[in-house]
Image (cartoon, rainbow, N blue to C red):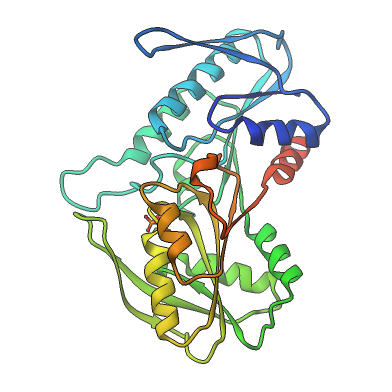
Length: 302
Ligand code: R5P
């Protein structure tokens, strides 16, 4: 197997290569004065199984184009197979029409991935479990939940005064799964609403939250930080004294760093599916790596 990486998360690709005890194969990416990119694979890949790691996070269009070009270069160079590891799938949140007249961005992305005739896809914690159903390429949908469960077990947080919390109704399946990995730790949910025009988040209610000292909020991603900040304030009003957050994808847009650092929560655990630049990191943040899981998946199923 030969492993390649685009530019969106090379540190993760390096870690995966280390786990696989191989060297990351170089990709020459030349940027023309007008911003267009030319991609070239330098090593021979004829009859070799190959994989490319490229989360399509900010700037998603740039990262998608790089990924498409690397896949094309590998196929034209005679690779036996190409697995695209997309730890964070950009544009996945617009998976249906929320308001009349909107495009379904995810559908367009899926059509493009399918047109490339990729052999296999590997994703992490997709926003909706229905996404794999609409993709006709063989895929593995991995989850960071086992990594979160391991961390929570290590912290030895007491099941009797701790509750797992989903910040919205859509995340219930996720916390039920995590609860089953943690000896049935109790779980609850917040009812969140988002103004589609302004993006502002508010809480309209909750279920099963009373009587806990500690809350572990679990979400698939943190973007603006609005969901987490509003949920933390709500949990404090409910009498919770310590709040921890676990999120797979650190999208960290806008003022998320300031919002999360200033918020009432104790700590944010996020994974490295997306590369977090130094200027987006903050003292309350701890990064957990998905590299061993990707390496294991590539070793056993590619
Ligand atoms: C929403 O359904 C997602 O699960 C996340 O809660 C959301 O995308 C987080 O976004 P933000 O940090 O901007 O509130």
